[in-house]
Length: 322
Ligand code: FO1
Image (cartoon, rainbow, N blue to C red; front, side):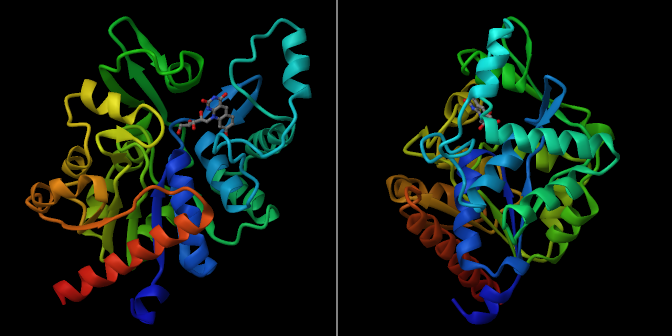
């Protein structure tokens, strides 16, 4: 990869643990002033008067080197005295919030109540944790993912955490999206990026809300940067979470191809795992280049390696079109 390519600014679209892992890899190979991560906020919800932003916090803790390696979310070594005390009052502690994690929610909620935007609060919190790249909430408005099942409609974390993703998903909607707008800084990050990276996040409930904000899909499609996606599905299975079952129950293929198909109008390059190489031609027929590599991210070295390959792929694609 040429130096000029690497020096170009990179904007990643991310949500969930897979997104945070690649974001950390990118942070290891891209100068912080050149890296923005636009994060899904449609998983956010209120609990005990606090605003909880799981995807923002997962990215923030991961980039700060604080994330719990066992779960990918929460803070490593965090204790649960507060949650235990809440349970003593008879409240069911269905959502695991550690004591240190509570500090984030308390300070964020207070700042939001005082009139700060989520973008401002996230900037301050991540700066204080030593994160130099820009973590940008997709919007400062409230958008909430709703999951339709054969029986009912569930708020996202009721489906995801409280009910452990046991329900068949028959529909996904984003309440509030029509009146929401992408923040000005996130829009600018998309418009100015040399490379836009679609992290290996759930395409339906992590990247889906970002692209569903009014005008954003079109904006990404017309952005001057190269668009590179990384498949969150390997060998037909989600690396983590319910993306594979969700894809199927919503009528898509649970495969790298199925994800590429959802992004067919957007991507210049799609990065897939070696196990999916057999599908290369079918994905290329969707109109994108395919790069085959080891797409599983274990340790930090793996994340940086994959991030480097994503940027290399963008360089290759640009050379191919120029
Ligand atoms: N995920 C779980 O599966 N169970 C939890 O109890 C849980 C708590 C939690 C607390 C803070 C946080 O930032 C994330 C947390 N997550 C938990 C992860 C989160 O629900 C999901 O990773 C995302 O919303 C899906 O992208």
